[in-house]
Image 1 (cartoon, rainbow, N blue to C red):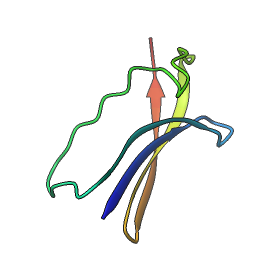
Image 2: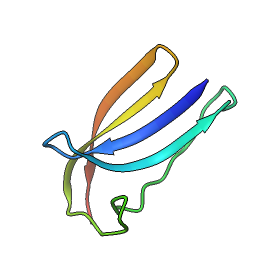
Image 3: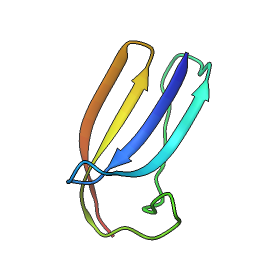
Length: 67
């Protein structure tokens, strides 16, 4: 299946697509975000949302970016 991990700002605009790949092994995984958007610009501290999508599964959670 294709797995997508994306980060959105408080307004719902996509800030960064961190990961998109086929056939990810099952189990626990760790993903790090460097605090930059897709253009390489540093984003401000604040509340963001991440979305994990795979097959028929989708989960959105909030996170706080602090510098």
